[in-house]
Image (cartoon, rainbow, N blue to C red):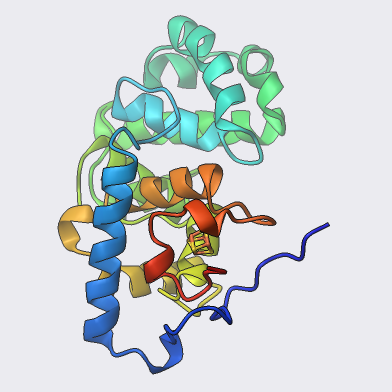
Length: 231
Ligand code: SF4
């Protein structure tokens, strides 16, 4: 088995994030965003959704579950319980049955119904579009709030999941482990107009080229911008 790649600078690279100025890192982050956007022009959220509410539901269901499985489950769920009001009023057992294949279905049902009730009671059935209001909803953490803001509403927001964390560290864009600190580091260097798309670009690149155990540096379009490159 090949050795997992460390997050720090690679031997083959002359780039050294520890000595890099903020201005240089900004330039590099912009170049990374541009190169990945050219490589993956269709990169966007892999979860299927038509409305902000559907993205809220799909993101809650995606915890500890693949996007592909969530996308198999949500059509029937959205057909039967299309609105926050309908989901809040449904018997919990019915919701559990509909989402069972995504795993942790009892906790997820509680989170979905609590979120749905709060959206109905506090926001007239519409998903709010500020971080403060979204984060205040039960069942919605910071990552989900940022996914919804950046992806469904096009607001400047960067979400950090495991792929975004891994690639940001590998690319020397952050040294942090905590998602909130990583989010702040990325906001300092990624152009604001790219915030909503940047996490999706990293996720696409992580799934296709920069695999956790065996990154394909030789075909990577950003290997000249990556301190962990093996080429
Ligand atoms: S695949 Fe690309 S981004 Fe990932 S470690 Fe290699 S050069 Fe860096």
